[in-house]
Image (tube, rainbow, N blue to C red; front, side, top):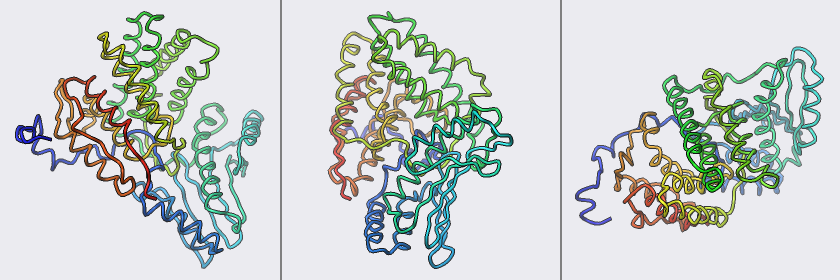
Length: 446
């Protein structure tokens, strides 16, 4: 950054350094466990080494230390006796409760209450049991549960991780589906979730409706055949935008995922025009949901495991590169809204589909903050990076530098050349921003 840039600040607010956003508790997107520090990663290797040495207590303690996110406070391990523990693991609306004895490890999570026997419910659970590798569904009294158990001497860190992950993520997914699909079931053990404040609910519902309505309106203005590709990008970015910025849960999240699957699962059988029509119909139905029904799924909860798996950075870079190439026609032919949607797709698809490193998520968060400035401002974010076509260059560069410097201990080769950013327009900025993201290196130190 040059001397004149610093002198005139290009929109820098001198007070911004000392401001703390009142919206710090508002989190975007889904939890990812691909964010472990170097110290936490070392705990995993210690747990493996201790297990091989048959030091089971020390291995257990290192494993749960690795699993715990200190900011989320999502995992708790309590030592009860010399060789015994109990633990809790938070995952969305569910809490996994576990007991470790000198001989066994047992974990359980409640799904729903079933006061009367139901053949359809039991058939559903029996069918799902075949897809599980480590856990199983069970009925204990009136409660539907999921269980995981293992002899302690064969409970390696690897088996524990994947077993508890399957238990926690499947339970968190199935409890909402079961209760919504079967009237005989009642929700249980979900009092720990945090509902959005009334203000946050209203703002997110406003934009939830506005983004769907404006996308449908934009799509109707386009030729359905010649712009089938652009229309698909508009719909797909709408899905991923709602998932990241609104972050709905429960039945609403399931519906968003179903709409996404409409496009991808029909890729071989239907043309892009036909798939776009299916997406259009699905969003019209979603828009018709009662407001009270939508707001029921506006809550946040702690999580321990990501539902997605990591992806090689080279493949992420290829997706970003492809989006940069695909947006050029729309940019050159004066369709900036679609050009921006194509570029947003390159980032948001990765964020939605994979478990990304923490700096990638933070850089995506900044990208969305800039592109949806009014949404962030209404939520109470004090940082104003983009306003009425004007960029705060210094603040954007400073934020990027902070993200990169905060990650260099784990990723020593991570660099982002902020001097290459183009602030002449939103399209130019997005293009230059994605070019830098394409070049990121995530070779880990540990």
